[in-house]
Image 1 (cartoon, rainbow over the protein chains, first blue to last red):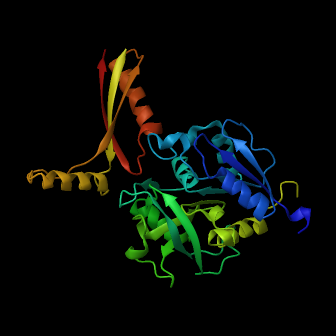
Image 2 (cartoon, chains in turn green, orange):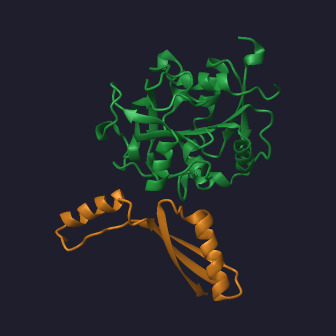
Image 3 (tube, chains in turn purple, cyan):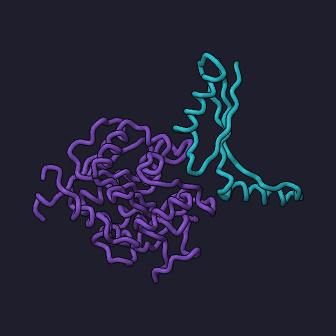
Amino acid sequence: MGRESVKKFGVVVFPGSNCDHDAYHALKHVMQQDAEFIWHKNTTLGDVDAVILPGGFSYGDYLRTGAIARFSPVMREVVKFAEAGGTVIGICNGFQILLEAGLLPGAMLRNRSLKFICKYVTLKVENAHTRFTSACTPGGLLKIPIAHGEGNYFADDDTLAELCDNGQIVFRYSDEHGNTTDETNPNGSLLNIAGIVNKQGNVLGMMPHPERAVESELGSTDGRTIFTSIINNVLHHSS
Amino acid sequence: MYQATIIITLRTSILDVQGKAVEHGIHSLGMTTVSNVRIGKQVQLEIDAHSDEDAARITDEACRKILANSVMEDYSYTVAKV
């Protein structure tokens, strides 16, 4: 892989982020890309090609998940970056922050079981025509772990209809045959939603952790297809 | 100085699983006349405001902008001079 095809990822670090190093490792050491941490108090993103809001418990999940992190100084820049068409992926707590920031529609409720759930799930790729999923097979299945207490996606009926009509639902919780039923829904999410994009298609939020599924030693490499898609699709900052 | 007391609950259209679990607990005590248990949170804050209206306006702004998420929550508040 030539250096010109290497992309630079900025991993935002909030107080309480705990998947920031996993995301950095996945991109830098496994995917062989450039990666750097961006402290949440930064007022610039630098010359990154894509931004990752990692998982964790930013601000201890006080008030609501993501509710305080979304007011961190760096988030003004993330919003600007996203509005200019920049690629942003929020994973788990990062997804929750994107919802609170209004970059994605909807909100996260407590899991219907009221339990923190940490396990592998099967995701069905509902839309393989996004910059985050172009390397996935349409309707294909990904084995990626979840680890959250508030992943029960909620939105009003109009918003849900809009998500469906625009193909904004990217991943749904399914079984190993691709059936999306109540039994395959780990947290109560409406329509088994595990990940969505914004209308413009440049901001993805997903509860499962692709950065934890990039090495076979750890059980799955399916997360790589998401990072490969991003690497294939984002333009290099200087190009 | 004013003190605002804010109550935030899940919107009534949303199933409150925590409230439901607590309701089952109450019923298991034999208190079967209890129903519709809803769990929420209370936020108290003090405001240096010039009038009741001013204090209410600031409280409402805080609720809208950070304290409550209107996608899933309702809020109500009272404001009192202290």
